[in-house]
Length: 540
Image (cartoon, rainbow, N blue to C red):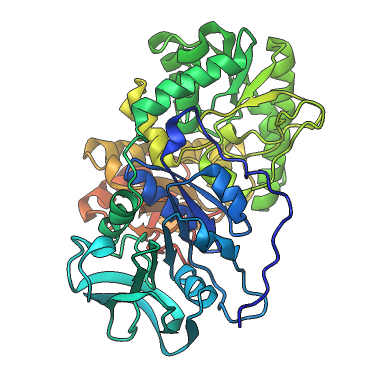
């Protein structure tokens, strides 16, 4: 017996970040709490078909109005037979739209259509070989015996009427199933993760062969449509943009300038926590090479002042965010007035904070966060800019593609992630001018040695951390008592997980020798070999 489903009564379609006609080819992912829901959307995008993540509470009528080419039900942590398990609108099965259930999504499909799901005698986690019983349709060109990633404690024990077995593993008799007539499919594994070697082929089969989508989601098409949208929205009004120098804000600046020219004002707030030479290089690059005017605000002293005596990392972030808001508000008054705030909001931001702030009179979203500045803080509610967020439908890798398309140089497009609070959270303990100078010099050496060997793009991040302690050393037959520096160099695909990089010994030796010889105040260099999890990439 199926658990009762509680659905919202509001029938208006959910807010989807559509741009013009591009989303005629649309795949919707209904999220049941999976850690991989965002990854499913990214994999669909890689097929050059647009996708969005919506709540599992989205009704069949709402979906009908959005008119997607296909629907994917994500995995999730629940068991379908639990009283409080999330269920979708059962009318979804009658829409005539192809549906793919992934892990929990497959079990939910089975449960709601009259099959049976029970706790497995033996759970299955990690890599498993997939043995294909029907090599057509969903599993076309998926190699028999290919590796797929499993993560489930429940299994399908009885398929609903009209379903057929597509594949199995040693521990899971029903690893993939289908009702070909209704175009309903389910897989017990996660084809979206990199560990599933045949996963992308399966996803492509669903997108192209089953949903009959066409690859209309291209970088060039997005740029062309985004520029039209920006011009139509902004008109002759002025737009303010907080430039940080990262790939998101730089791509946004390029795109906005391409669309509205001198109606854009970029403001760069130098809070004193950037790496050596970066503020000067950034302003010069934009003004002289890109011909995009930047208003430079030197706020180093005021930011350093609010850091006095602060050692807690969360308090550091809070104070930096608050001070940034105050500085940015002053800048907006000095260089304004402005009607719009351009934000580098990305699609993961949209997914993670589903709520939006809407002006009840105009229906416009109003700014509460400066996401183009790495989410360091929110603007006060009375600073009521209208938002323009042309990147809000893009993932990070898509932003890089857009940057390349519009002429952003590789040194910015491929820039390694850098935290909004900057070096302030790479100095453990109190942030002082002396410690900032030490870390800047050490960090510069790390980057120079990595760059000189052509290794910069091999690593997700490579940087130095300064510890607030002193250790004993010997230099020139004299005893020293100075700071240790930690090298943190990791590999990752998306920052969600990371592994410490196996950096060649000669590179580590060169970095260590230069730091202890060239950076006054450091006498020891150590290498962090902790992966994420259990550690994090940044130390604070």
